[in-house]
Length: 413
Image (cartoon, rainbow, N blue to C red; front, top):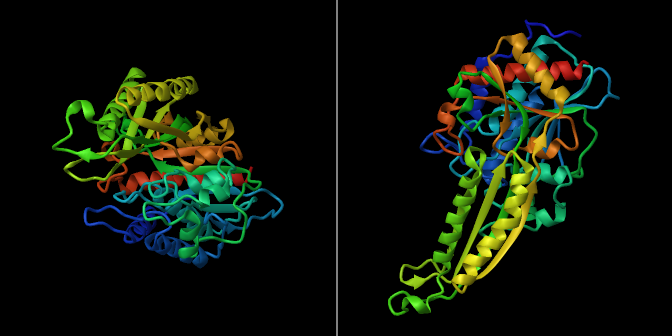
């Protein structure tokens, strides 16, 4: 079956579904709060499953709560083509981060049903569990377990700030399925996502053809000093864990800036104990992450940053525990899948440019297991992980149209 220019998604229907999903966990400032494995996440999953069921898709979940909605193909012996993203969000997230990829995938299924098209290979739309990592401290958690990057039982033992484990949260909302959370044979994986950066908008490009993703390393840090009275403890008797953390945070920023415009370094979470205005902090916990397109740059950071942070702690009489908890090599997506995205943009007449993803995505974990590519759409001012995150109806429709094109091309090759 050849691709046909009349095979179109319904942009208004897609936009309506995006807005309907955004009602679940809606925030007063126009964003969403669908933190993973909460009751709000459960409601989002239920709506997704309901929509899939109405299309005749069979929905299953694995033991990590990853959801797979299957549309059978003409040849059941062929490996399925996967596509999707995630429905969970940051606590103050936007409507489109992750959700665009899932809901656009749903629109692809709707369009195929409407057009009466049966693909040669089966299709499976995926909703990955906990891409954001804001609750349990492990981003892309569901895809990481599926791909064998993390051990399932270790991940299920992780706890949130209230002491609830991943395993308990999965059971609590009924998200865990009976299928094992491990990679199965698949022909390809495509993920549509907003860029979460300003490049496409600045260059007036409709689509980003994503060729790969940056290398990353995350550290968990615990810095311990001594709690003492803020009014009676002189400077030379202080072991202030927060002051030490502040210096290490500036080290993170300096490490980022040393690597030029491509460098990234962030401390986005900080917990201070006892968190009292008149007590010198005795313990600080924080997470530090670094990203760069070049593996060698991250290797250098992995070696030097712990030594430099330890020197700061020692000079201040503090004890530092610094644990690397997450490292991903720079990812190169499958050339054949990337070529399909490139060809689709040319055929559909969309201005496009090739780019490397600055953000981590489930596709990064899937790529070593399954031929993978990503499709980016612009977002206003490059803003994401923010309730003001915004895209246009036309941008969403263009991304979904490219997704339909590449899925058809791959499934019918």
